Amino acid sequence: MRVFFLDDSHERQRRFKMSRIGCILVQAFTYAEAIRALQEEAQFDEAYLDHDLSEKAAAGAPEQGEKTGADVARFITTMPKDKIPKVIYIHSFNFSGRVRMVQILGDAGIKAIVQPFTA
Image 1 (cartoon, one colour):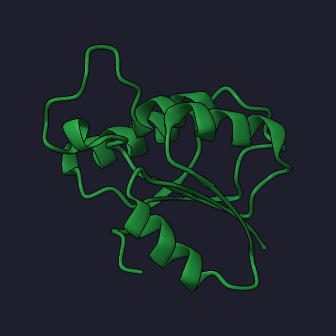
Image 2 (tube, one colour):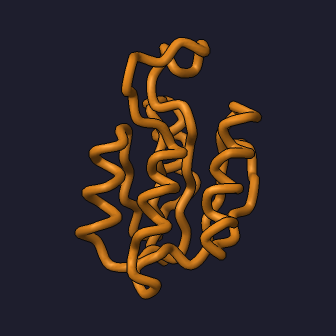
Image 3 (cartoon, one colour):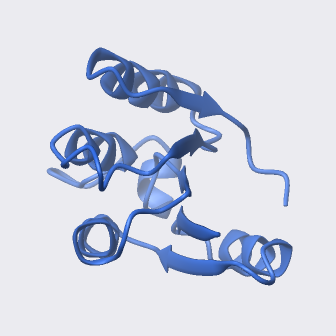
């Protein structure tokens, strides 16, 4: 199984990796890393997306122009259908951010499942 995990937290990345032993796991901490992986890698079976990609964003004060998981969701809507992850989970603790991400994907006909991070 090919799995993509986007989160800026090193601890959540470490815990998720431990929970997916045996999978081909591609991890991204930033918007740029996420876009690169989604463009260059083969289709993922599962993708897990966070909204806030910095401590400042998580505190409600992102830098001017800072990219978030919502921007990653927008990018996914532009991907060829055969590259879009088969199942997308939104695991962000940011309620309004995850609602926005589900809406962005849903408006493009892509289903996303809200699954708060528990690993």
